Amino acid sequence: MVLGQVKVDDQSNEITAIPELLEVLDIAGCIVTVDAIACQREIAEKIVDRKADYVLALKANQGNLHREVADLFAYAEEIGFRDVEHDFHQTVDKGHGRIEIRRCWTITESDFLDYVRQFADWPKLNAIVKVHAERRVGEEVTRKTRYYITSLGNDVQQVLYAVRGHWKIENQVHWVLDVVFREDDSRIRKGNGAQNFAILRHVALNLLHQEKTAKVGIKAKRLKAALDEKYLLKVLMG
Image (tube, rainbow, N blue to C red; front, side):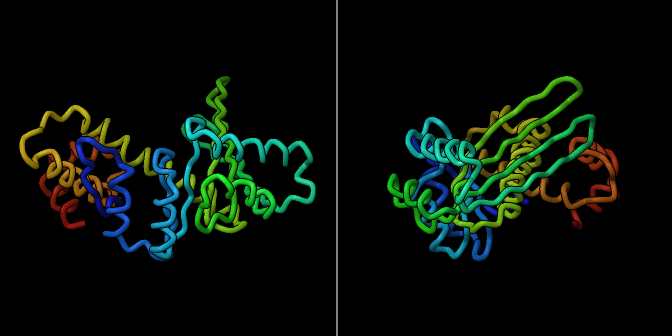
């Protein structure tokens, strides 16, 4: 569910908007996940100040931080995690003709974390994370490895739950807005029109997600609401 949004300045990006959004939302006790572009010490500090935890993605273009975390995991695996405080969890999901296997490791060994901390003085950094995802569709197999830093402790299941939840948002919100609502094709530019219609799309998407009686996708629900006034009222009533 979309709970809030902040417009990004034309000459900026979401790095400047995220702290503003964090001020608007009550995130105390929550886990905040953010794309790699926003893996910034100031954002992590804002999350911790708001009494929440973070799981921040790393990418290779971030330089030292990503490389060093990857190297630390490579070293830990080389020695079989001997004398390295860590945790591991694996999930296997089957459906729609595919099998998805996710393996997650967390390292909370203080010597390892001290080595990472020297790069950016990250607030409340408690673990580094490696997630290896494997998808099998028939004979085709794809594999991806991602790295994260987190303020969560050595609860690897909770970390993997947060990582999976982040990609669920990508799939069920951003992808749907683009493909089903065709948000990227919108030519609304005048005044506050684009911002206002973005809010309306989010409201519509939230309502359609909450409507559970129709066992179809969001696109089919939109069409059903357009053709059936009774169903439309059911959606609007939440």
